[in-house]
Image 1 (cartoon, rainbow, N blue to C red):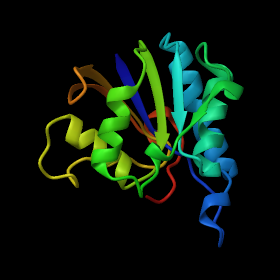
Image 2: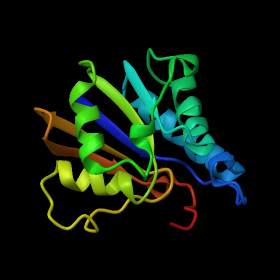
Image 3: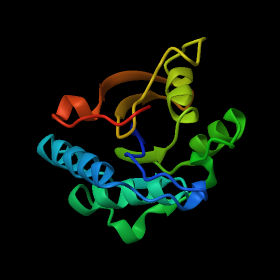
Image 4: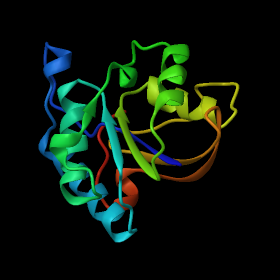
Amino acid sequence: MKLYFLRHADALPGADDAARELSLLGRDQARALAEFLRNAGIDFDAAYSSPLVRARQTAEIVLKHVGSVRPGDLQITDAMLNETSNGTFERWLKKLPVARHALLVGHAPSLPERVCRLLGGNDERAFEMSKGALTCLKMRGHEAASLKFSIAPSTLGLRQSGS
């Protein structure tokens, strides 16, 4: 199974963090990423997102253009929140149904930390993901992975927002 860890794209500021929507830049980042994935022939057969608006919107834009999972079939899960412990996330990951390509949309700092842990890293600060960045891991069982690729919006010709 390949897991595609996607940090939500750029979002508008706001007092209610959970309700922050994507900015115009964030929408452009998500569309450019969707085009990259479509051109690469990626076909998601499972998709999970944090319940926060900016993560859900990022996932929906990508799914609108890529894969068999439609935006309305996106599964919302607290497992993709920063507040979810690593142990809880790992137990959730082990219970995922088998999929060839699964999209997981979440937030920093937990998303890059989880990628680092799956790659066997000891320093969870060693791996960074900018807003709108995507990292693909090929899973070896449920607890270890190998890095297939990592791409940032700047690689796709877009300016990046602040981290």
